[in-house]
Image (tube, rainbow over all chains, first blue to last red; front, side, top):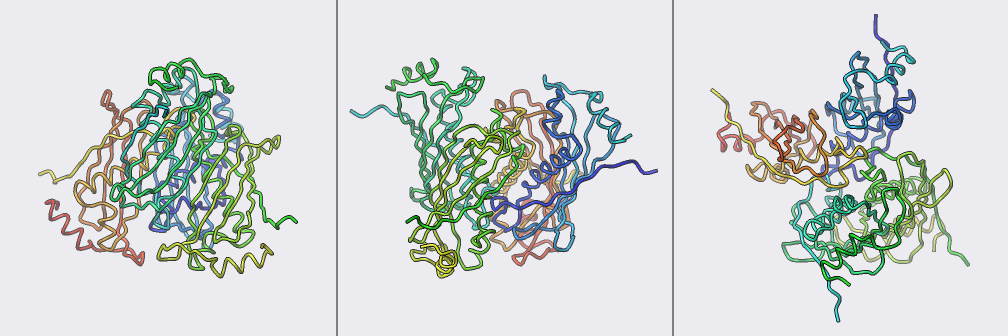
Length: 141
Length: 141
Length: 141
Length: 141
């Protein structure tokens, strides 16, 4: 049986400053698009940066990867899809995919893993209570 | 009689990601160059971000301006000069100039004004003691 | 008699990466907000980056200034207003104001001046035809 | 027998604007550090962005990954090491490691893969002549 997943999708605009001298969106800008997607996910499902912070935690990235499938250019109207990957460990794991809305072609994919730190910046090995509650709320095992 | 000023100069490298699709350094990148210059000044004269912070203050910008005289391109080897502008008010004021080291032509000028906030983010109207001491140390009136 | 002006307004979201260690939006990020406002203006009135480019010109900034009135923080829902300032010279001039939508308080103001370069990067002293047409279309004198 | 590798190392300064509200260097800033390392490598061994461009090619990233081992903070004096990974395919592959100079502890590692595009933005499947020459020059098989 397939595990329950949560996903959301967001159209976004490319900033002029994100385009490099090859006339492509600079590869480093995708870090911001992924972060925007996490916040859009967080707003929809209640797991945003401020919600995590207000529960007493930080959730820094420990793994981040990108696969660039085709160049993104300024005239494109892209969208990003983010999917929560269930895990039993004290981690937040996401997959990402960026598409060109014009023809639905794939521009890039990616993956990220976040861990929890408490406010003294100590790594938290167990699932924070609020995160366990959050999983229960969305029926994630 | 001319007031005493303090100044420093720093060569810097242009990042590929700072170049836009016109093949010019993106105008917004100059904010970083100015900030780098403030830190170089702070390292030389003892007025860096961490020094201000460790004395109990933040020093956010309230005014910032740029005049772009000629485009900066990736193959240039530029330098930035920063000059402290004496003031009796509780402010830190700097002038900036960016030059092309190849021919000493002027690329850009600028100006910034910083104020002091305490750690409760309240504006400080008087000169913080450490700043008064700092001025005295460098014979600034 | 008051000169005709054009203006537009845009709500925007703050990126986590734009917030600095003071928990304020980093001052340099405002360059991007202003640029986003120019593009929103360009989309509404037909004077965007690609439209200028497709007419054979670049329009780099020669003047840019910011006045930071109060700190912008991650939990704010700000908007930016951009106003075209009529001029007879071959320039594009804008005023900017960023407001906190919560209480309509003013966060920052700014000003920019752009000139025209042809595709050989030469400064254009006269109004390009497309720009003269554009002014006529919007009844700007 | 071990394949010949090329490597270089570079100390770097953290920009205030690269520090986020957790007081860590924002994860996305590492893209710039990696790019700086590629340019330092390119300057030392003759494979920089402009050298590739002047030979008629772009070399965009198709793969990029980061493993964040411990947070980087503003007061650190880090260095980045970049190692060229030999390949027979028409790719440029690098490994990266960022260290804290204070105690030589590992801050992050990473990996990147670049391909070649010609000036018409078409993917080049074979090794460009200049790249074959470059490998021969450095005795890379």
